[in-house]
Image (cartoon, rainbow, N blue to C red):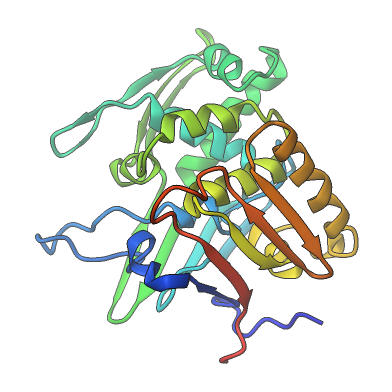
Length: 288
């Protein structure tokens, strides 16, 4: 049975051929000016349980919840109403439509109807209310990163003005988040692919993993179950759900190949043949 080695660092990551530093490096580093931090790596949003594989699912309040991530040497904690892939869609949409300015980011005027159309969802009153609720969660949730000799506290969205009468919002996304979500090549195209997956939360989580590991990844099924934040009670049927979801991604042309043997799954992303594509191997932490 899979045992967590440490509550805040249960999973290890290996990158073949010395490519570890090319994608991750330190999760958080000091910039040349010590009063600012460099951007956070994309993996904390896309390959962790910060945004679980549900979609428009029930949320519950947690305080100082240890996050399961692939960050090494740092521990992450979350306080607020829990997020799922719907909240990540809202955050990504806001970040993609944010203009950067010197010293930060501009506020954007957001119309829920336009956001829903971009996500291929019905522009219903219920879904509009879900947009408002998600923005509230994204603003009030707090992330704390604890490293050697420092603690870094941040939130994803700085400010939100909700005008429910006019069905409009003014949103200011944290500039570090905007920079993080815009990392890499062809990000805009990959985000459109993500949006095309509709309400399939696990498909979106797995697609995010291929955005980070562009060469694909190998993992133990129970590791993925823990890392994505699926409910503990769903472990028994997770292999079947994972297979069905990988079929969806493959049929949509978003994967080149995949196979599952016992408790191990191997995913080949479409960019596998691109030189220096990063591959990930995710396995249980047995060092603690």
